[in-house]
Amino acid sequence: MKNKKLLTYVLIVAVVFVLFGFWFMFSSNSKKNALKEDMTIMPSATKTSDEITKNIVVEQDFVCNIDTISRLGVVFSYIYDSNSEIALELLKGNEVLAKNTIPAKDVEDQHRTFLTPDSLITNVKNKQLKLRISCNDDTGFALMINENSNATYKFGSSSLKGRICFVIEP
Image 1 (cartoon, one colour):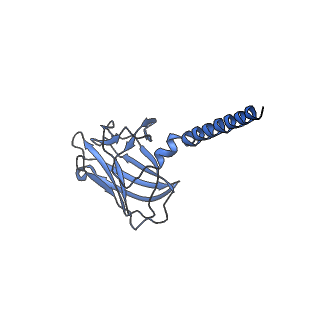
Image 2 (cartoon, one colour):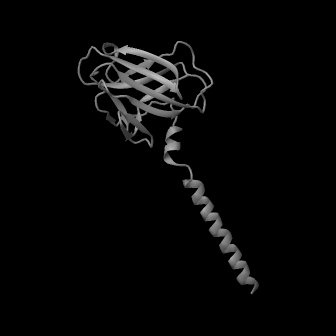
Image 3 (cartoon, one colour):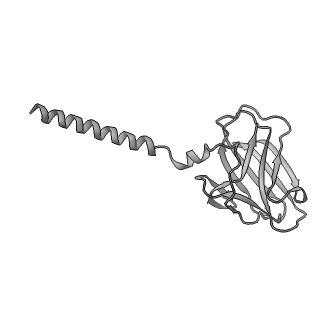
């Protein structure tokens, strides 16, 4: 009788332990993990986006893993020549932390194009930020994307799997 009670107790403890382990492993959702990727490392590109055209706004949400930002580099892919301008913005909520408008002629194919704030951005560690890319006309450029990321980005009205290839620098 005593052995039966002990066996029951051990089984209950084992089941609770296993359930707790599963809960711990799977409790954080993939979007939260994707937002916490290391943004100081440029991801490898696995594909390109569609062309960024006049009415398309591209956005990537992320959690900043460093306290200061001196600039942010985005990688574009060349499609054709254009005289347009590309607007790069970094936002915290509705607050614009940095914004640059860059002529398409200054954007190099598959090289970093930098969003450089007027002054060092501070106190952003563990804050949710947003990279926004838009243009005044058809650009002739697409974005390099890492589709192996658990993140999602917004391209116009579509939410797509992947992370825009960008990096933040302290």
